[in-house]
Length: 221
Image (tube, rainbow, N blue to C red; front, side, top):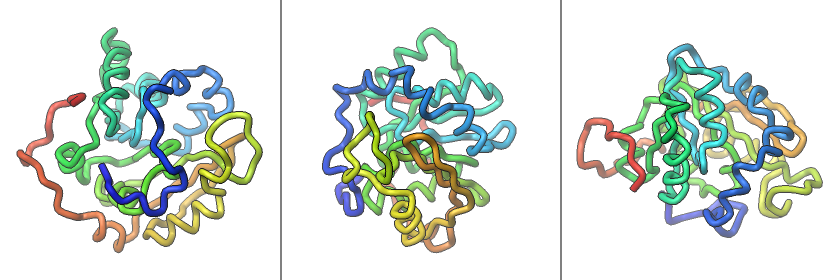
């Protein structure tokens, strides 16, 4: 999805060989889905993008809690999407649609999401990729950035030097053109509800090559 990772705190991307960690039930204890979904505040019948869905642990929870929503599970790593597809094969969350976060996928999803959940990705994404999130929002859409808190000691998650403090995240997002609308601190995470200012929307509207103007079907490769 991006070549330039300027602004990313973590030196390398999450290794998909560690995907089992994303399905650890303990995650739901220290980062309760209900708390995130309350902050997300998705409108009825909306499209919600889970940006960097991984194995889809929270996307599936959201889809089951809100069957009125269309949940786009977006990830750039095909291996992650294959793991998600295997979960969805049982048909327990028919409103989840896996998408590959390549140029074609991002172009197809432009301006479609009323809400975006960006969970544990802010420390991995470069500035350009963060700004491109704004292109996926509807005119009044919002992003919920949730990430590991670099200001607290944690027995789980990346090293503190590889993530942002809440203040550091606020500063970065403001610099990139996002408006901070609400904040919340969880046990090991911070959460920031953001709107996208005019400048970041304009900057994110970069041409993306797509073979079709129609939205593609969900795909994993």
